[in-house]
Image (cartoon, rainbow, N blue to C red; front, side, top):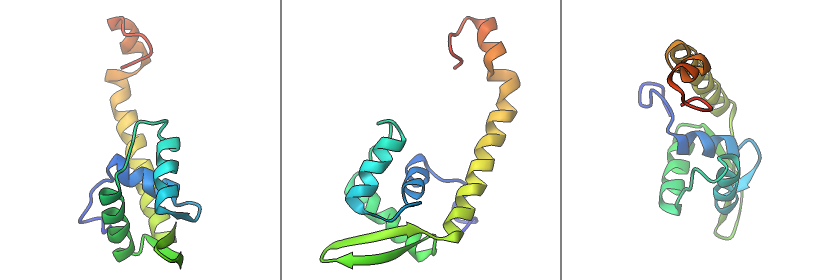
Length: 115
């Protein structure tokens, strides 16, 4: 998705694109997202296919094949660049928050394992 349109990726978008590092069909993507997120992120078919359509429009993914109603997708170089940009953005958020929310602050406040 164009950087102007999406300043960041939602968790669902992020995990869908991660899942598409390998060729996957819709059902495979849903299972892989569940696996990658350790069950935290579940994506319904409506959301999944809407996002796949948007990613395709923006050339972040491409269809590799179709077999009947099943369509298979994979992330493109443009999609990988967007993922890297998001990865760096998330790292920056963590670094910026560390002085306020890091392990030392958690110890001071008695919070086990950080926030």
